[in-house]
Image 1 (cartoon, rainbow, N blue to C red):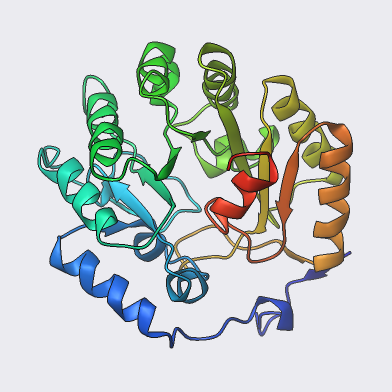
Image 2 (cartoon, rainbow, N blue to C red; image 1 turned 90 degrees about the vertical axis):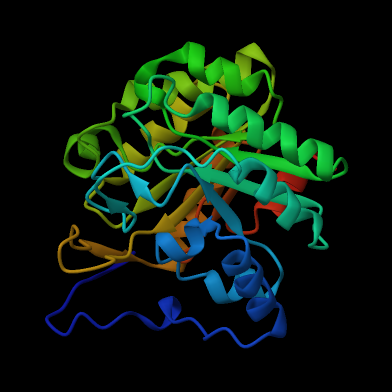
Length: 292
């Protein structure tokens, strides 16, 4: 079941969200600005920013706010790359130490301009959080490092509690959506995390871009095959007229169906719904597979 786009391009009722209103939202926004940090919630125009920030959860984005790639679905800026901020890991840790959180999600832009893709910066960020927030669980949503699995292993050796990397879409749409990436690189990244350090491994797919049901099922099978345990499924929403158009709006009942299919195939937990994003309710997703 789906809703095809019409000329008015009005969103279905199930995609409407409330504006942020909780005091926690404004507290987090103040801290992010004070420490000059980036969040993917803001940079990627996430529709859940009000829900998540009102609940006191956010996803920090390290290595700057400008990406070296130009994926056609993403609202993160592409342009001139600045050198990594060497003080950023400690500022991230300090900010987290001021929040009453037990779970943190860290992601980054792609930094193909750097020799190590930013892997060492990733390690320092994880280590800094461990020192300042020893009880906090850490989820890392990492790039594919252009298929250089030695760099992925380096982050795995820092032992995040959850290692996430997004497949984003089915194999047939990869070149159209993210031409500088490879489907195989993404699967190898997840496989490396699952096998080298036996980490909890997570991925995400966007729907509504013209994929067929059998392709979604095929992707879920591929993810199970490389050791993925958690999958997020959400509706693609066009950030601006320069991004790819939405082909269809997937009905919530179809998301429920995909959840059942994925878990029957061997995924331990599938978080599926129109507004679901990779970091949405990340702590609850991790708890669903046994991370206390």
